[in-house]
Length: 496
Image (cartoon, rainbow, N blue to C red; front, side, top):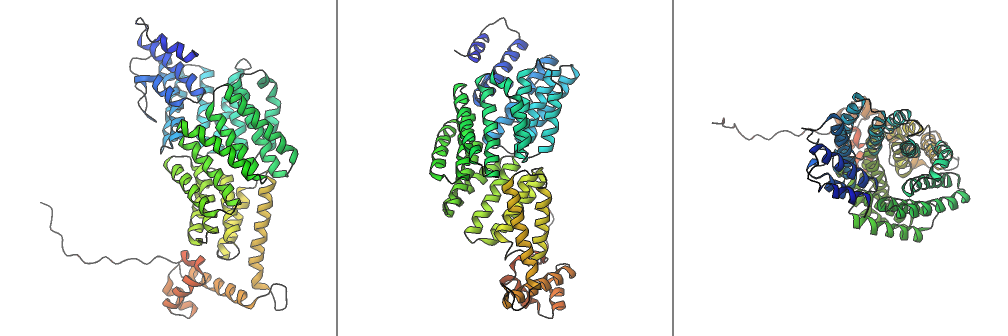
């Protein structure tokens, strides 16, 4: 019998007050959340739980117990919202956690304030608001003392995960290595977190520097993380590390091994009915299928992941999945659909604060469509945007891609200045480029009005429409859509 089971038996005591019962339920829920048993935590809260994102009824509870109940309901709402991909769950979880935070502050309970900030940081991270996550986690760490060692370790690990997501791998590695002496003597759950995070950092550095030593170390650390999580019965976290291992193996071309790790992760997550993590595994699977040239299979798999992420509020994950979907559609020659999806991914990620994801989506748009299908003005704009969004990246692979995209931009812009006899000179390409440039200028001067643009170009509106639809589809979005006239339906009788 575990600690949670023992405390549940305490509820059978008829002498307990309602406050004592509520506090016991909160403590049981916290223990179950800690090991990833979210449905069991919901059941442990009993009548105190009113649903994901729903504020609990605090009537009859003291300020201290009420704040604790808000904390656990907020934490559980965030986790269940992520597992089930429930729309707006993270925003509602933040509201509940923020109320708990204010109550703890008014009670002068510093450690509980840091705990609430720690949980808020995860909600911000899930929605892609990395700057906000970093700030609130810093505040959480600042409010703790040496005697609060376990919570300090948790905050540090979550801070590291934010640094990894924003491409600051060397800072993350330094933080983890400095903190190892504490984790070395910690419980299996915390050891699993440390090994999982250092493995992820080494994974990123292995890919960035193409360093085989980092690769070997990362595999060892992932294996250690899986072992410690299994010992702590943290099945979800073990599955996450199975997925991360598969991603690492994919990056080094070991596709068959990667599929095997994903199959293991799918088995665990299917049993746990964790839709959110299953969608992340599907995204990894789609990446491998693309690398194998199996685009139709990849299209089906990534569509399932996108559908799941669209149900929830985790914008960064959705943006990454949409970027992958845009790449798949490009490979399947569904170019207009691909361009639209990649544009959407860039805007979604940037609006949510996931700047790295937005930058990578911009690179994908240039890589897939920059040579032929993007107008010169958009190509330059997208590149400058990618350069700004990825200005702080430490990922050598991302820097390499950025430089390659710069080459695409230069090649496109220089073609109109090439001369007969020069290498790669092509009269049809030069004529097509000039035509596109003139049409783009005319549309901009005419404010997108096709009739006025056609007049400036000396062609009919029908002719310009035909040219845009056939030779310059990348410019089609620059025209103003035609306004439909309302059909006459007669005079409506007034309502009686």
